[in-house]
Image (cartoon, rainbow, N blue to C red):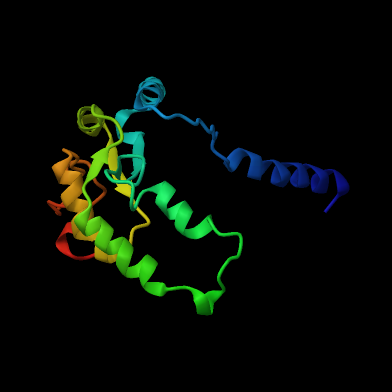
Length: 173
């Protein structure tokens, strides 16, 4: 192989990683009006069926309706004392059982009152679903609070065409 060919091959292979990365833009906002604006902009650039909307549940769609169990409470529980407990000093039920109990007993509220209407409009055009880091035993309180607050992802979730409901509602992953 001659040197000229090696140099050209090296240049092509070096450029491939740069070509494979999608354009990423981080936008920090506290309002869904900014999200709506971005979705509208993307609709002018891409077909609707090529736009995927993924929402986090906690403090993005729903937030704690009480002080206990909210983000500030979690931070207080984990970071308030300068002396940090080691693993043998931690109480495992605090984060396993107590959090699940809080989700079961505490009502959640929308982060913005107009959110269900906005989601329904976006779902008419795009695939949209929600992700969460919540434990599996919080599934039913999570679904209950989404439904109670007017949020339903069953019409726009990723699923096989023959499935009528999202897989998690059928008890399978």
